[in-house]
Amino acid sequence: MNYQQFRPTGFNILPPVVKNLLIINGLFFLGTITFQNVFHTDLSKHLGLHYFESEQFNPFQLVTYMFMHGGMSHIFFNMFALWMFGKTLEEVWGPKRFLTYYMVTGIGAALIQMLVTFIRIQSIEAALSPDLIDIVYREGSSVIQQGMNYSNDAMAKLNAMINTPTVGASGAVFGLLLAFGMLFPNAVIYLYFAIPIKAKWFVMIYGAIELYSGVANNPADNVAHFAHLGGMIFGFFLIKYWKRN
Image (cartoon, rainbow, N blue to C red; front, top):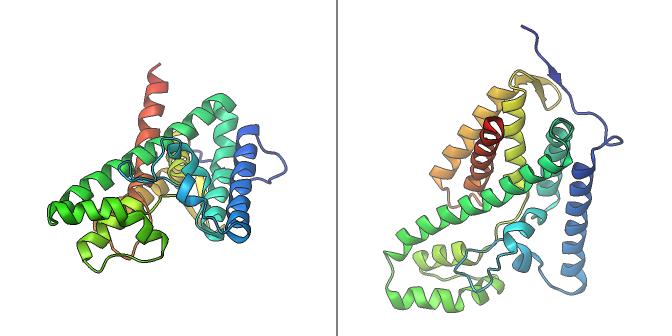
């Protein structure tokens, strides 16, 4: 059986959607730094994805959160994956279908993350009185903005879930990873440019790690693992729908 070997090509030849997504993400990142340093305003509080019952939630955050990142390493690895897998997928699908897939998986990731947050919040609220829950919803955002949280563990967890924004293109990027694994299952990806692994195994292993990490729900882990899985889930069903039609 013949196998493809997948090695990322240069940045000089990029299809239009991938190129513009890289530029837009870069501009948002520079804008975040500028607003923080010049105007002392954290754009992630406005453009990051908040829980739908938070007073800081806006529907447009389902889109804008994809272009916000929490640091240099965060945006670097997301954009590297966008370049690495997105270029090939856009060349296969064309710009319109590729952009549709990217946005659907990114928004789908946000919805799955919101659903998981809702389920977790219900279990936390079951351990709190209505008065304490009301305090968190009324005052929690200002407490977070001051870099503080409640001494009551349940109130602190509830407040963090409601008022800490989710940021990053990771959900859409994991959707791209899933698509590459489905379209080119036997393509060989070189991890760290040295370790060969077939795309299908890479996707399965990464998905299993994300599922385990999401279920484990380590308090010290601030990664939105279910958003990653959400991007893969929406990507899977969208590709199946396209194949059927």
